[in-house]
Length: 166
Image (cartoon, rainbow, N blue to C red):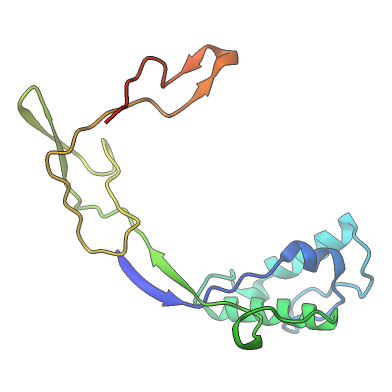
């Protein structure tokens, strides 16, 4: 797991879809008409523009993200909106944590005094969302309460009768 600080910039695509004039970010991006009326056709055009190859998938930290942000900022400026970010900017910095399921993670449980190894990605999915390289949990109690479903209309309650105090 690696911690990576990046600038994640999020802007309201619905606002863009409902009220922005045409200003493609790149020559190959589909254009959106200057009409500011909310419509299914307008939403479709904005979606086509942002989904086009011109934005290269829009993934954080890529040229596609930069193009997408430029496109959205351009649209908001054309509407006469003012930025609300730090130092008068349109975006805000957010730390991103990349998580992966490590193939070599190990986990075991003790059942009736016998230790049983669990196979990663088959019997268990061991990972953490914390920005650390290694996590060790030793001798922690384990309680399985189903999937957390409470659906009385189906007579299903994974928590019924489970005492989870302590």
